[in-house]
Image 1 (cartoon, rainbow, N blue to C red):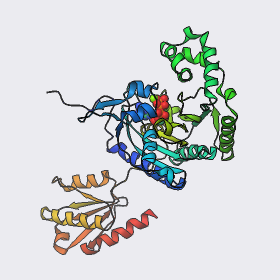
Image 2: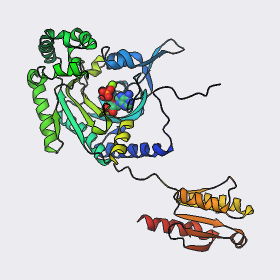
Image 3: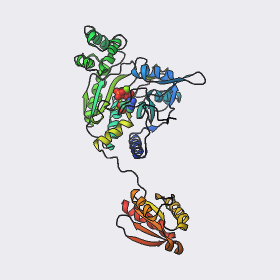
Length: 425
Ligand code: ATP
Ligand code: MG
């Protein structure tokens, strides 16, 4: 029988990588705390309608990428492809709009999109997601972008490029849509097939096309900035000058769009060179009409989502500081057949006093166990041989200096705690 492998587009995050994920989440948690975002944990599947209404029927995500199935109760269910719509659903469902505004929420976890798998693009991937719900202020946009950049700064990432644009609002976007259509109408045959389809349904999304032929054209297209209404123009200026005030440098990219009505004003992306064509580590912006699209009242919102898989690829590519893989402090070695249980008891006691300890229980030789101790990066080995066993003591070997001392078993944990605490200082 052929052995079963993980499904295409998924992957196992093994021990040599998972500690980096833990680190990224620890840093995210710190940023969330410093910026006042509270963590929420949301379901991995939702009613399909939340996404078809909340992301939009004409997006790639909804048109082609969703994992949708009918459950045993006949409901159409979708594995979440992103978190913003779920965050807004949760905010509305729990009447957070009645409490003091805004609600600043963050979450993280696996997302699912049926995409063509390649480096940095998977069918199951994870995102960190920060959202500020309930405030129309441009300072909320500035804070969102600052929080994402602070996250990357703390993770030691460099060479990041922040692209920013405004996609306007339902007042001014229709004007821009017409301007764009007029521009493309003479050149429709130069567009790719997908974009020819977008021309009627959603011409703004043509700007997003990565195909070289379309990019040549979109480079010449009229810029959205010239079509913004007074309010959207003022918002955009407030966001860019706010960012400049805090020293976040951004490039305006008029081709950055979200072609849907409830995405409003600010759209931004953060790119990292290390990622090749999957180069976005973060995407975000404002969505003042999302709540209404999913059946709620008017709730302005702004936020970002960042892919953890891509953060880690970028960190590895840049040799960014992730810290070190956590090591075991102490390796306990029984060097006499009847000392195995004493070794186990000592490991128990060491862990109870706050140290990390490990031991062998595969019956390896003393030599093999000493090798294990150095391989696991232990600072000390605790050896219980026949002499130690009979006198109730333990030999403690400093793995770096090679120095060894013998102590009563009862004082080993306290002595080691002190020594390891001193080293950490
Ligand atoms: P892309 O243009 O790369 O497809 P996107 O616009 O679809 O990105 P968003 O929906 O804005 O991405 O999601 C936010 C972030 O999630 C992205 O910037 C990226 O870091 C990450 N991401 C999105 N899709 C994937 C995927 N299939 N695999 C891994 N990470 C992903
Ligand atoms: Mg995508």
